[in-house]
Image (tube, rainbow, N blue to C red; front, side, top):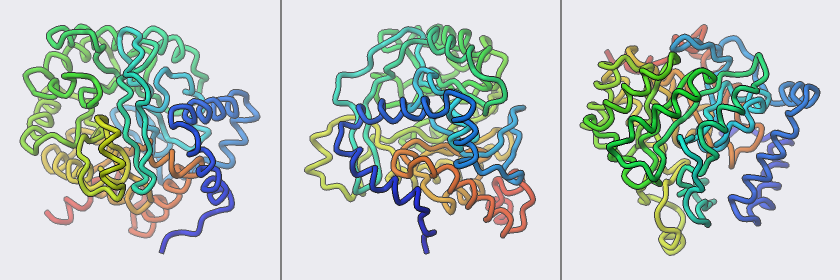
Length: 369
């Protein structure tokens, strides 16, 4: 039985119907502005924290040398330019990833480029790494307030840069953002930059990851697509272990369109783009399980893709995820979504006899063994 919704959650469900009357990218900018405004000053941050944060010691964890107050973070794509870095903790997230940021500013793909599939609680986007560039994001990160949640910097390839120059391009972003972020995520898995996913091939990926590692002192992770073959997933995992990466974020959006509740006549005219939300959940979980079976505790695994409930969050932890991420779930779930998942996850950890989150990570694999 699904948990009863609070008055705030019921109110958001009604508000969502109104917001969905506006174009997706327009409402994103309005909602983002409202959230950052509400948490800009100390009284607003305190009020938001009191209402939206699940402060529970069982959820605290330390991975790759960074302390996280809770495991669910905001995935990259929402705060592209690090404009809201002081908002995400008071809004209930244990951390956030800004970006994707590229070395040079770029406008992204032509609009419309963000689409809703309400029947699937999903989104399709082909934003194309629209951002103000690494220097602008670095300036915003430099003004972070002390004591906030960890912030990761997600970096991608500038569109006009040729693949053979990708390593140098990533290094530029890494050098600018590395000193100001708590960890770095190398994004080679968005479907919306031509040729980007080809960089997931080990021969192309190795020099990029090495260039980033040589440019920063913070932990480096790589983000992969759900559409990789199992053999390619194994190859990336082996490379990450070989290079001493901190971890892998699995997964990005998918280019697949099968199994949707939304009619094909509605989906097909939308065209290209990455699909996120519940339709990618099963594959994301499969990739997570495969990665953990391959690398165990040698890497930190961050699971993203279709997480909507505390049950799913707990399942991802048992499957090997030390941290979790969401974006589409936040859009459809609203401001109480992170707190609801964190409170439910804490209850499940206690109900199963765990004293902390780390004890549960990968437990299903150990039970099978």
